[in-house]
Length: 351
Image 1 (cartoon, rainbow, N blue to C red):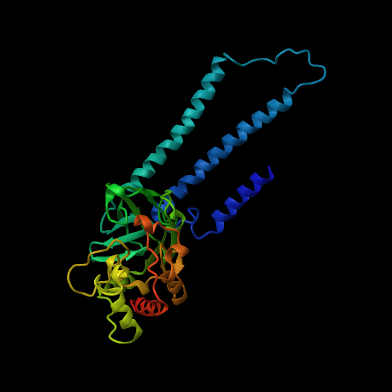
Image 2: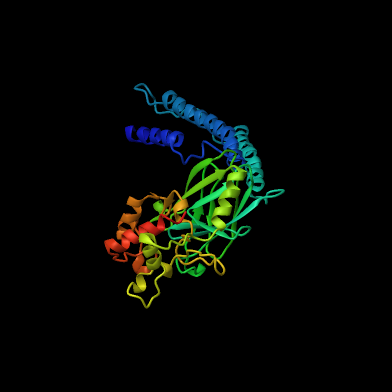
């Protein structure tokens, strides 16, 4: 019993204080289900207290006594009125809960009225890709939206080789913006989100998707309209092209061709850094054109700074469980310290 109480208390305290909480909605699509929870919880609490009260009353009232003669108390089995009562009343309660629940589900799933922003979402193992078709920009793990603007997510899932046949199911969930929605290979699912305030919000893949499921986080950031337009303008600009120093050496290493001495360790084999020429085309790994403008990387689990980036480049699977032997996740490229210094300088210049 003590263990159960500690577990329940822990869950309650976690729900109240954690930044990833559905009990603190920050947008209309999260507010609607939150408002529905209160009356449903009150009804469930009333039923729970009633049933447990009757159970306790029966246990105490009809307990075995020393002077019992073995006869049974008065039985209610076959009492038509009582059986109709406890069949009809629960059915009415369930119907009363179901009607507003179904209405809320359809109202939050409908295409938003008026102007809205579309963002295409792809769930990879184990990171999120976001594409803004209206602006032709890609981000990874951090979705940025304007405040008070409906956003319709068009979502699918794929494997690291971008083959839907080999993908796995994920579930997109930023609790303070909206409910969950499955992200399925070969299908397009939809979810509406909207933020009422500016800020950064934590999300998580809510469908167990394998080894690093717990490390597949999402950072949602809502900006004032002017700040969002400035962000878009920056994201549409080509990547910084350093011309000298360590950053320039890192740029050369990043884009080395397969016939150079870095061979298969070329970052450009999997990642895109758009230099302003041709169409933007994502690789099998995250688009890194403006890597340094993101506050986290590697599934939004590590703060973007020199120390973390250096450790990551030394041995990525040691920091985040992955399966590079199955082409899932970034492998250890056995980079030298000099190569790491150059790549870190280049990556942190990509603002």
